[in-house]
Length: 362
Image 1 (cartoon, rainbow, N blue to C red):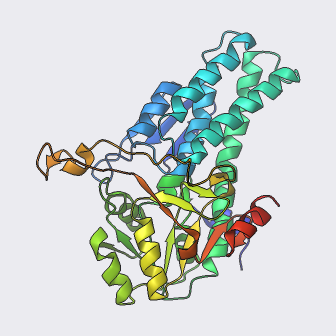
Image 2 (cartoon, rainbow, N blue to C red; image 1 turned 180 degrees about the horizontal axis):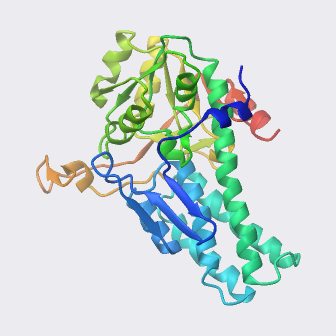
């Protein structure tokens, strides 16, 4: 088995969704809302810009949202005239950005981390002025990015152990490098590492209505990397598994609770139930930053979005204008349907209510 260091040397992503310029203090993101038809990069200058980009799905995927928000906190400090301004500016920025996508725990984790780091630097006298604080916080944000990439490589290596040459993997939404900001991904990491190592593995990707992250992003990303992929409608998932056209399912996560409940893109629960019934392994791949060890299923808010996202496809009406719509962005998969949760710290098997903390807190 290759090492994380060896993979980092081999991995050359063709897509770079998040670009931070340390010299110019500039954040640029690939606008995922217009892919694959346009490849547009957008410069984000303020925390409000970051919040809008997250809310409008220009940046999406829990890890990518977290990384972008970390840089957004740096942008907030650029406004400060002295250290007395910093904490309020960062607290306001955190409040604005956290509201953009409330279900993705990486977002509030990253903003809280950056705010706490700033407090520490100021209280301990490690930052004597705003310029020094910005330098320190940029290092923290860069480290979040670097740690994410290393975590994905490690997850990919653990996930690779679950694959055999010739395997076909069913996924959901987009849990590749576009979703994480690194170019590698969580659920797609094992597939991409297999490709790098010359192992024949392919993917079946559901379209993922209503934002079509599967057809627009996963398919685009895999084709860019030269990895075989087949697109199916969301409604074909059951038949595909019934006909044994896939060997396993691998999905990402936006939030994982201590008892093993997994929040991910709508449609994940359906995949997990069918996989369970068909005897197909169902794996969730996510970094430890995605785990929420404090909440329960009773108090996690599942985001609902604009009804017109369902009434239309890219602005073209497909339903009566005033039809009532229920448009949840995520669903929750009970632990009984999950074969294992793969993290950078190790593979977690049932019973999750006992084993999640053993891995995450070690």
